[in-house]
Image (cartoon, rainbow, N blue to C red; front, top):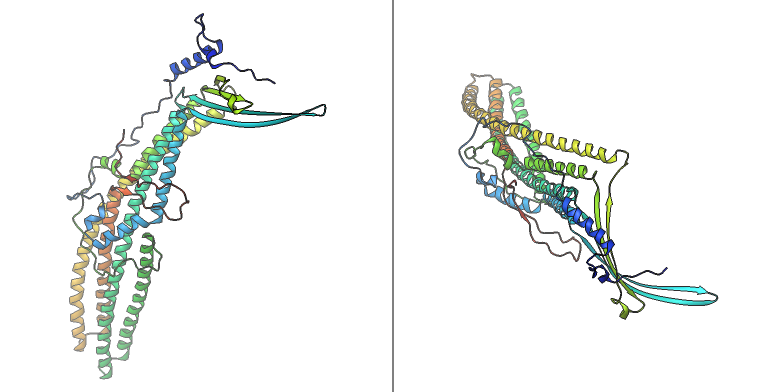
Length: 501
């Protein structure tokens, strides 16, 4: 079959002033596409799914810094945070997910632009006829362009959905960083508490051994029975057993902290500190409405609603006709010098409209509408959960402070009781059981007070996490195990604060 070639200039206006008929049809389609391309399926306005209260039940007076842990004024904690934000593998994984989402968003928007491909072919053919062989050789070079006119905004909506999904992924990264900071602080102060418990237990063991010597002397002189000595010995062993449990818990926390910092569990990542910090004043809780911009999980849920709404618009637009335009230009010859002498140019338009599809397109619209509704309800539940977390942290810190005041008073009284009962016992005026009870009460209160103070710090960590905060995140350096030959990527900086357009 011989391919009929037409000169490119055959598409130009003739002397009669008329256009080549086929070109005229194509241009009519293009003009029609331009006229109706402004039509699109509009996205719905996203409204807050619930009303939030005007204020929180409590609020402090000091401003919470973006890097909330700086308010603790703990240099060791600051160093641990720097290591965790640079080396934690869960955070690196969140960075990878963000890179994927951004790449998908960029890919989704590519269909808004025409595609242009270049084709080159070198073909040989042989034919056999009546014992004779004929050889043919052809070179060809061509360009192929295609473009889908976004009549109803389907491509635009798909691109918007991917862009909103990328923004949600960015907020997920921020939420991961915020959660990581809280986990590091929590593990660190639990470890400090365990170190403090070891010091308390060592002091209690020493005190119990001294009392054991006194009781043993009383037994040797016949002033008391051997049962008193055995009970005191049991108390010493009980303290030793508790010390073993604290050592085990401290080891577990050391491993947990190392993992959070991206280090092997055998690595010693923190010094031995035995004194808990004194908390600063309670930070300002702000207004509940401000929480919408501070909490990255709420922002992520909001962008997920936007993405689902855009997906719904794309699904609706997919039920309408689609118009595609193509243009091909090809030149060929038996020799390379013959190339570009003759051209074959093709302009085509293709209009496709669904008629019968078994209800698949309508079902997809119903599905995406349900997905959008689910995202909206998830956003509302996320807001409620955030409000609850703030209120819970506020009331817990307030009540925990009252509990610590009570423990301080109990400890002072228990110290006085222990001294007096012991003195009376040495004078033979008191039963040993009273001495033992007083010792147990005092030592339990000493350890309980330290735990209560650590719980107060944990309440403050929970409050800072619930209030949400934002700081600039710098993407960690790529691992050396990355694929060879990849171009070096610049560091990406993103913040928690996203301005809604």
